[in-house]
Length: 261
Image (cartoon, rainbow, N blue to C red; front, top):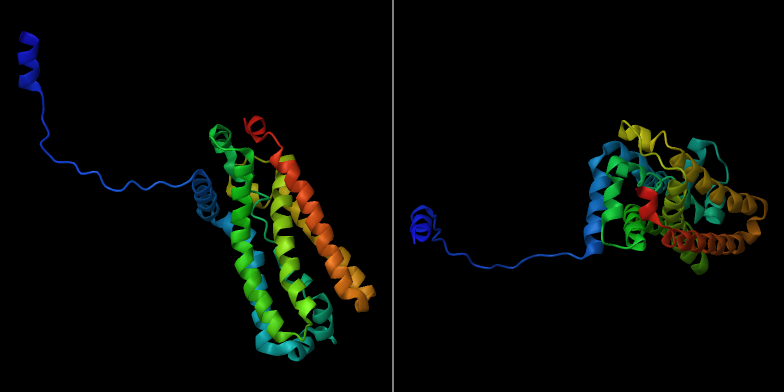
């Protein structure tokens, strides 16, 4: 009896009326995507260094429209610039695409917090897919804007115009997947500043070099055999797509949890 009386005397009662409102929830994939996007924009050096290619892509195409191919050829002392661009049009934006791999340093940026990824109740595929998706979020809008401008500026056939959009998009997926693949092989978690993780990382340098080789090989063939430029473009795009598929399969079967611990 005494216990009941004592409890009643000293108990605090809240007379406020609570109303249940709408509870907003998001899927695990969307939460991962937001987390990855926040990681990108939280570090200015990471954002600038990995997105500069997309910015330069749009800026260079706008410069091409403003000055025109003939005037630009005179300014750059490159006679026949329009012919070169016409033959290699799909690889022009693709060159800037391979400079913009956010995934090449995405695992590095996890740093000491990488244990969070291994403890999340999601699959390895979901983790990698969100990192790839953020890279595509950066690249695809720039590709569409640049390709539309190039399609209006350059006299291209229907198939050439189609490859103008397809080839850079394939390279965008390639550089995103390749960046993750290389970062898994050359991680750098013990960085003291974000600059070390982004600019002084082996994974970033290897990824960019890989991208340049993937551009230089078909570009050299087109330079030697300009008449076969469309055939070379289609073949190179298919080869890069096949390599991307193999790398992606390797990624989704990788035990990222054991690797990040």
